[in-house]
View 1: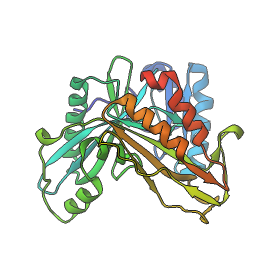
View 2: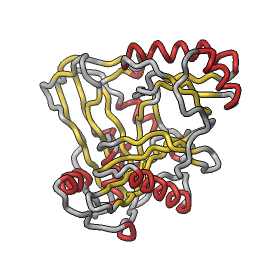
View 3: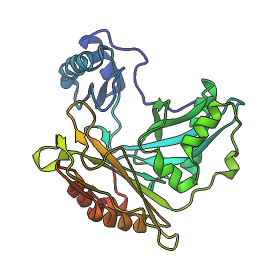
Length: 317
């Protein structure tokens, strides 16, 4: 009973089968690695002629990255948004959804900015997406925190992408707008404790943004920047009359080293305020106050994003 993207349920045997399935589905299509993640093993074929080459490229990348070369064909949703539903389910069969996160601002299919709630979807769509996410969790007897990811078109039609059966990088924005500590709840659920709330108890308060602070050089094609962090001074956790606050989740300090062996993320910079505009302004102040030396960071790029008129207008894909 969950909306899914039009496509074929089985992995393709070869490029010829992908070509025939793409004909049935209708271009543009997405050629998508079964084991994919982080944007690897994905190709868009805008026309029928591009399907075979795209399939082979996606298959090769998937084989090299994941040791699994299975590739699916599905409809490519144009002007899409990436909107996901956070849920938590206990061992007694209770499950609630904690609103949505808009994660449409991405680079190479990896999230850069996240916000909660989304400025795009209506309360009716939020409810429908939340109820489908809960139905999905119930169908597989899911327990713990999890995220059901949807792709949403310009008319608010939404389609299931995947479920992340874990805590996600962007979980703080949900914590900020709901007041729910997801990490604590996960531990309590694992202990067998029932959820302390029902769906009617979940309320959304204010607006929150997260910016992923990376050790990478935006001026050089976002090349990762490695080396020792010589100076590290995050913005202070500001609370002014309970009207806004800043949260920094990180595992690094001055003297720490950014190596080539791990993801280049340095920190998650999170702001909350009563309104979306105030949360953006608070984020801009926090970015301005952030100091990282010794390695390049994407802070100037993040600053430019939050100043962009399209982001301020919520005009995202």
